[in-house]
Image (cartoon, rainbow, N blue to C red; front, side, top):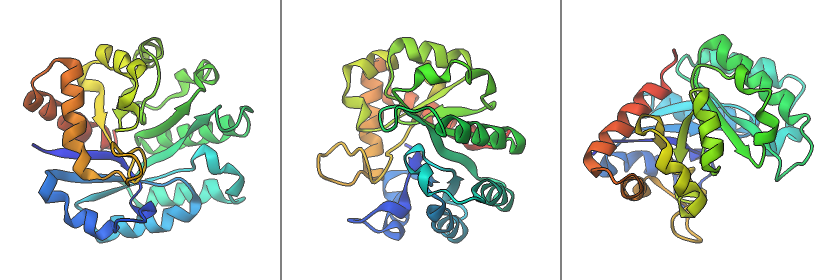
Length: 248
């Protein structure tokens, strides 16, 4: 069985070491790690991990909505430079979070800039969306050709809306504990499903850092919900992941 972790923050681990996680990839059938940034400070660390492990680590550069107050005046031009420097890099993690901040700005403005860069460089977009679907009504038509609702935690109705615009959906251990999310998963087509750990966050085990060893368990959970053969579904999700991470 082959896996791609489509959302992991290697630079954020405390209990584990990023180099050990990368070394353990063959043990769990993991072919690639999509290493995601949240702040400008992350970009250098993610870049180093991608440069030193070019066949295994795919970088993603973006600003998470929780940390927008930390952004520099030159964040946008620096982000554009990073995307030019790394032709295989994705855009993100970026998006909207009404739970953390009830005001739409500057979240929406910054998110639109990310969407514009994704379209300009023809890169997939990694989207954080928490309690913010109402803010997306006027933004769906601005989405790039490839985008994913990372660690999707929405309802079946929200999934239906996002599917109209071609969304992919990635699922982590934390969100798969919710009955609401499992009902949404039932209607999401198998060719739109991705796996992620969101490591070191959202572990299946309370108090522990999540890791790539959880990917087979996540697949098993999804296969049970979808009532699908685990081998068949695993191959489908792996192909989805390969297709998603490619620039178009």
